[in-house]
Length: 581
Ligand SMILES: [Zn+2]
Image (cartoon, rainbow, N blue to C red; front, side, top):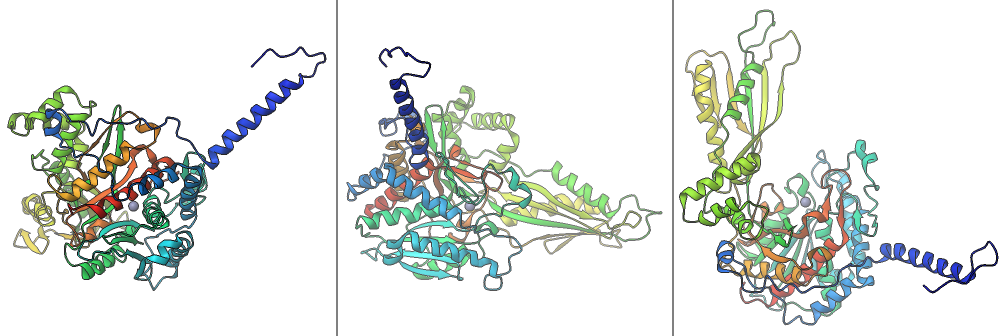
């Protein structure tokens, strides 16, 4: 700014006013433009590292494929990239997500079956929104409704001999607890975009994926793309309650249409990418733990508590809980586990591990002592985390017993939640109860029925223990093939190319790595196991892009959500032209 003329009065000179007014306008523009269209502060910096040859050491620890860009769709995907980076594209895609959040598809546990409870009809509002917002998808794709609320869109490919690509998401969201409404910084169903985040229940789980996948197809249709390979969008409506009416029936429907292993690949929510120092590690989950809920009921004679036995039913149950916790399931680091492969990728690229641990993990592939040393080190670092990833867990989550302070409890029960290791099973998890409890029952003069088999004393007993399941358990998922698999190559190549070319400031100059991961929770994918071996639980979102899932202040970074749309677009094109599937 040049020298200002001296003022002859007390009021500021005219030019100062003009400059000040200009700055105010500029400031308003900046803040307003933040709302209208946010900008990446750092331009694209090419990141050649992932595509450059890796040192042999790293590559053998954690094999990487080459980034995969669509060739036939070129320059179509570049045109979509440019649109998504334009103000118009950002505003439209962000507004789509905001509007989806404003449709409060809350699913409560006390909903009756679909068709018997009108509260499900809020899902129809979501159908209406999708129909209005994505006109080409609704004009060009076949739409099939499952149990009234589930949606299956089929974008028919020109070559029916090719197995379809399936992209899934769920429309339902967990409810907002009315007691926590005041803790939300923004109203939970506002869908407000503050220039950085889209706020509200469902913004992250799972409407970013719902809107992201359908947007990718709308954008491709706008540019006249016709796929060779069929693409299916499968949207459930009760994932947060186990998917029994949504994804389960959708899965059966798709197996009827395409046969067992009839799909080329399926993508659902789950894994994400992590940014750590100079590394971005994307982790599609290729394994998923199983689950089993076990109820233990102790039945003992009731009566007045003035002459109590040494152990009431509650006392017996307490001892059982203590016994189980004193005998946790073994957790071991195994060479053929997905967890081990994840750890080796971290050892290769992520220096947050100590050199000592990285060394153990590098040698552990053939050195038993190093494998044991790595396990010991991981247990020292975080035993609970190690057990969650390497073994079957147990958590006593419910306990009930007793009715009145002067009456002996006739019944007491506890419920134990298990997450089953990828190489174990429901049967193996259940069998552990007899191993641990049968000697105890004999010692306490109790009978024991564990999953239908009798144990413990034979004669008159002081009480009875019943161990049973609540609903059928879920076996761990078959592990999705990775090394040498075409589906893995296409998926990880697409992740690399998408992140490599992203304009996100957080990703600039970083090396991108893809590592297989294990999911320790469950999603709708359990209902698609027969449809394809190539199930990837991966949402292409950064770990720090999401917050507040299943609690207050759920929000998602708009940049992360838009990067997801870039990824889905590339994936559809790559899968379409790939000969590896
Ligand atoms: Zn979800």
